[in-house]
Image (cartoon, rainbow, N blue to C red; front, side):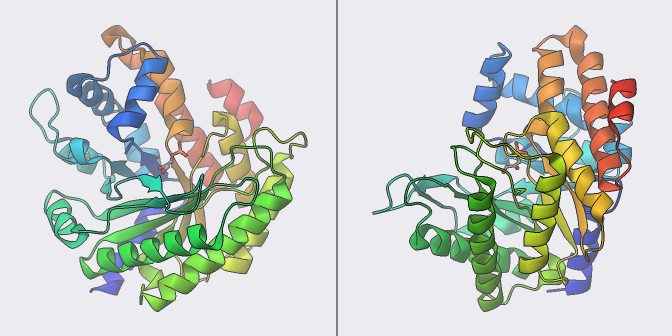
Amino acid sequence: MDLAALNKVATAMTQPGKGLLAADESSGTIKKRFDAIGVESTEENRRDYREFLFRTEPAMKDRISGVILYDETIRQKAADGTPLVKIIEAAGSIPGIKVDAGAKPLAFCPGETITEGLDGLRDRLIEYRELGAKFCKWRAVIDIGDGIPSHDAINSNAHALARYAALCQEQQLVPIVEPEVLMDGDHTIERCEAVTMWTLKTVFMELYYAKVQLEGMVLKPNMIVPGKKCATQASDAEIAERTISVLKDCVPSAVPGIAFLSGGQEDVEATARLDAMNRIGGFPWHLTFSYGRALQHAPQVAWSGKKDNVPAAQAAFSHRAEMNGLATLGEWTEAIEKKAA
Ligand code: 13P
């Protein structure tokens, strides 16, 4: 393993002013997104959609440090025959790949899941590296509810994340370690804080046992937010303060960068909160975005499957990428958001 080279990629992925586009929706998830805009989820439609995202200027060059792809997409060619990976690289962005096989029911833990995909992973990593991937993603899901999460769910998922991350580094790929504490449900912000802290402490202990080198990874956590159905919601400032405080407590300074998931937050909320955190400052990592929905919702609605709408959809994507890029610098404002919209 060349740790300096891994660190270089992890640092480039989380460089100030840029962030990651999570375009790694599984076939099931992209179908849900397409259903919402009345588009049939065919291989061609999925390709056309992702191709226009990856060709968007100036967003890809200026604001998107890397793109997380799905197995189908990393093998796909654009309409003119150019591999989609090459289009991403031509924009100066780094291609990566989701390698987990999804969250499956965890035995004897009703309502909880374990992320699968470790069997045969080494061979798949070798193939993905040959296809151009420089980093990988594995998402573990921790749900909050009555009597959950259980120790078993947190420990099993943290252990799987660590085994995945070690295999990635062995194969000279940067692992994005994503333990997502869900914001579904009616739990309080304090509960999210306690469960996220428990999860992150366990994850970093397992990473240590698995000999994962923190300089060569990126953490992808949730922000500390109340459940969507919680009666008491929180200000962006409170969310930013609590999130920074938990991260300072749990994430060693050897980790070069932290890239948040959006997890169902509204587009502008996800931007405002990232901006609020970067305005606080005083932490050792770069804080950026690795958004799926918060970057793609607007372009999906603008596109709605119509060729004529592609320029408007690209403009919508560029706008969100620009706003989130500013947020990584603590330079986003509501006035800029409205003026540029
Ligand atoms: P969201 O930003 O939509 O949560 O997606 C990010 C992601 O990659 C989840 O694994």
